[in-house]
Length: 234
Image (cartoon, helix red, strand yellow):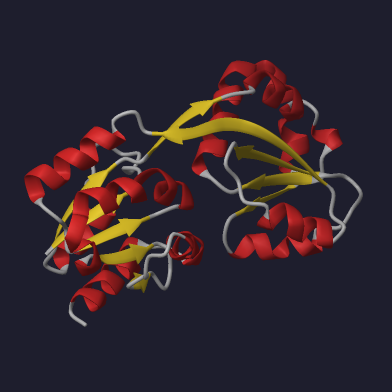
């Protein structure tokens, strides 16, 4: 069955996207259309903060784009970074996943530094605030709709028809794509099995009045493919 993936392609250009591979192994034909476009911003301010490790108790990363922004700055700092690198290495770095749960144990009076995107949820800042953990944020990338999104989605529906399932990977993807998918699907909208990579994206779909046919147990290609396969054969 045909599955439309509304997500970003993997960084490697030499390897097939794992979601396409997993769905193929389950007997489905998946197509991927990039939804978002990213632009790095505030790199000068980010560089300044990276050169002041004494100001912070640690770093928080919740997206690969934030990591990319830091790497971009490090490439330009060269010798200046060498002077402060060891001080950063003495501090904790938290990432999305199980490690984030340990933020409540961070303690200390120095704020955690959180380089983030222009579209961020307030769950983490609110949780830290409730734990009385100081936080300093800096927007280091802007998120916007991919410039070719409308044309690519329209072209897919024109050539492939209405897919059996459409998978969303972020609330931003829901925001930028859903109205177009609804319009192009027409009377067949109710036949589509809408899939979500996780509960946050599922909530975004429900907030727009759409039933979520399945949600990946974990945000991996294997788990999403299994969820979609189960939903399509239910």
